[in-house]
Amino acid sequence: MSKAEKTKGKGKNASNDHDDQKSVTVPQRWHDYYVKFHFPDLTELARPLLQLVEAGFCYPDRLGFKLSAVDVDIDMGTRVAIIGPNGSGKSTLLKLIAGDLAPTEGQVSRSQKLRIGQYSQHVVEVLTMEENAVEYLLWIHPDQEGMSKAEAVRAKLGKFGLPKENHLTPIDKLSGGQKARIVFTSIAMGHPHVLLLDEPTNHLDMQSIDTLADALDEFAGGVVLVSHDSRLISRVCDDETRSQIWVVEDGAVNTFDRTFEDYKDELMEEIKKEVAD
Image (cartoon, rainbow, N blue to C red):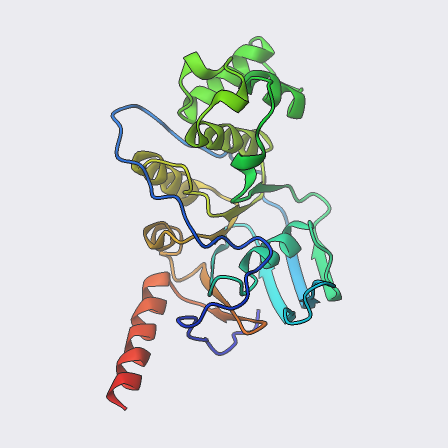
């Protein structure tokens, strides 16, 4: 991937991206219970897993918004944080990567064997069904091995911190944090090679955020993250050999091929110079 000049990404609010969110749920307090997020081990896929080549996108009903000349790639072990002002196109970029949107120019190439696990910032709001968590997950992932299928699903839900007394509660009666645990359980059950996470800390308490960071650190696949939680970004993008910051601003995606802490340090130096001038 070619390294482009870093943009500052510190300024103005652009017109809202279709799915960028201005308000972010404040993490809940630490709770004294055991929770262990874990994403399954994977068989490594040959490179490249996923590439955007000179890709661009514009919404037909938003003439003022366009992403242009996006050149990025994602492989096993890749760690990416996407940052930029609200409305700049961060969530749109994630949807292009996921295949939820097709580029209006350029191309996207994906490995035929690639499996993507996707967490959308709005996914909790759309979980309004009357089915319980076990029924929902068995509908999405019917092929369970070992013990009874229902017990296999309940064991996985327990690992992601959903209390056993809520496994059979209708989903529309659960809290946002409980629904988030169902979504993460479903993602893990899909054995993804790449995780696309759009504001994954919404609805999670502090302990769950920490164990999510641990799970992402141990995950052998690629991770692409959009988050307002700078602590999570620092945990995910802490290895300069595999970390990238993608700065989305003014219709462009520019890459910074070092850690998030390095990016913040350089940004602060530029701000100091501007103030001094």
